[in-house]
Image 1: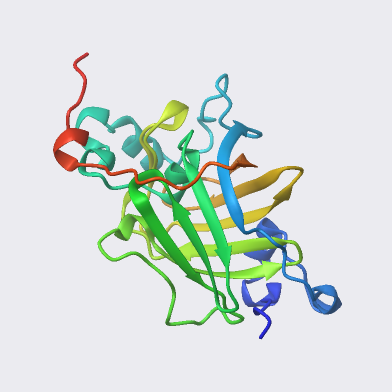
Image 2: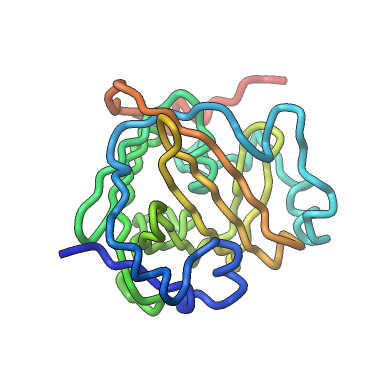
Length: 237
């Protein structure tokens, strides 16, 4: 059975434009599922988030700015409890392996970071009740996926309030319960390109997009083995 391919019309016009999905007769040409399976490791940024860039102050709403400025890394980072703050934060982490495997009805992403195992149902309808999620990690939301030509598209929502990132220039960048993200994963020359679009009317005035490169690797997935008692130790100023 071939994995379902979901039409853009199901998403609504605004999100379809953001995600760059195809419509109508274009779907007829989508007969092959891209081969994304393999082990990958993060390369360099290819978009917003380079070391010399910071958040555009016009991006954040007044509430988003307030939440961002109130972030205290010594107390607010969920990683001190071995909890990832968001999938964007997981993708941002350098020097750890991600393993992608594909099946007829799901895609599985195993992240070395925090030993996360993400099983994402492949769907053809937006109104699904069996969206994937990880019990006990509500800030990671719930998600479904489909293929758009050569790209895997992951649609996530139902988030708890938290932080998109706790590292680099984006440390403390908030997310609200109204956030929705579209992850687009496609093959690059020797790896993957991951583009994540965040839509959150509480925090952002416009969509916030993160783009990263992952390179193919022969490294195997290792156990991260985070221990809360050790992770909670914060270096003194």
